[in-house]
Image (cartoon, rainbow, N blue to C red; front, side):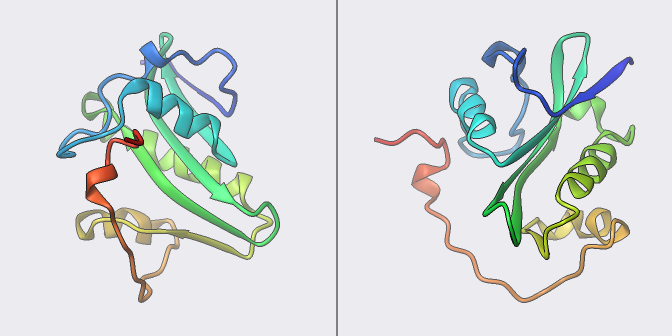
Length: 136
């Protein structure tokens, strides 16, 4: 593996965004995935031989608050520290924010706890019929 990390989307093409959202009952297609990344406040990508194998994005007001909605690494590349590296790079990018929040599944809370994220009470509303991100 020769993983390169970048915060630039300039050379990213939708065809490089396959293999993500494993286990989702429905998910964004590669066109919508690229739109999600382009509309984010900040993005980090992990690239192996021109293929995107991991990504993280953040939404923010640019002043006070940031939210990390997605951190994904393609299953074949998991367990090699790629997710940790992406999260550390994003934390550094957002270092001047007061709050960096995320919501995650119970199964990955140990991962985030190791990187100094804390549990808190939160509420969410999900429109699962919109999980693909394509407006109908």
